[in-house]
Image (cartoon, rainbow over all chains, first blue to last red; front, side):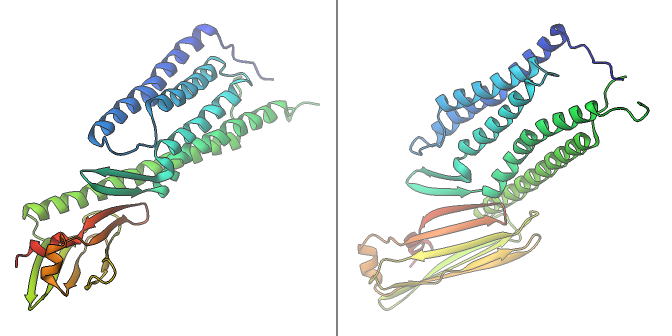
Length: 151
Length: 160
């Protein structure tokens, strides 16, 4: 027989707030700062992402992660966490224009191609998007199975 | 008793960890190789590299000029570096050139030999000395950088 571990709001809120702060810094503050630096260095280059889209992606990922942390241990947290991982993978993919970036500065043009590295960048997020629901489903399945000593 | 995660859940966690470790290892080694390559190019320009060098000279014979460019590069990184130089002269310009390419295995050095012949040198100078070229440097198999270069500027690099 399993005993359900009691999850209280008092325990969930601090960790959710920490997640919120970390996600805002990681997916909004740092990317906006880096984009500003690149825009100053290469004013004539069209960049694949704008400040607005960074904020939109950042808000989506942060919101999903925050809600996922608040509902941790409940079934509703699974789609929230999965959604945040998928949003993160798409954010990375679109931020680097699918791994091909064309830049121009001082009359010189330059093209960067790094698709294999991009796949490595998004792979952990995509794998997590699969792992989270799968792990939840198998754990539920194990919990539902009767113990070996039961009649 | 607290519920233990299933074997599958634990296996998935291990796979996620392996993916993260492999990604970190790949990014750090690719970063180091790129850094070593850039340092090498900077030391060539500064003339302080013992293993790498760049030489260019222009030989004029009658109305024709031939440019010889030899670039010796060492790869101090972990991955092979492929370098190719493509010349795109305008049709009917009387300019012919080679399109060399080399692949530098880690820890080795090689020389890229480029030759460009301009049949009518004086006309070429008057026309503005412009020959489109493309330099591709690839960090096999992860990334590549393509730079548009003006190969016509090499004509004056080695002097007349």
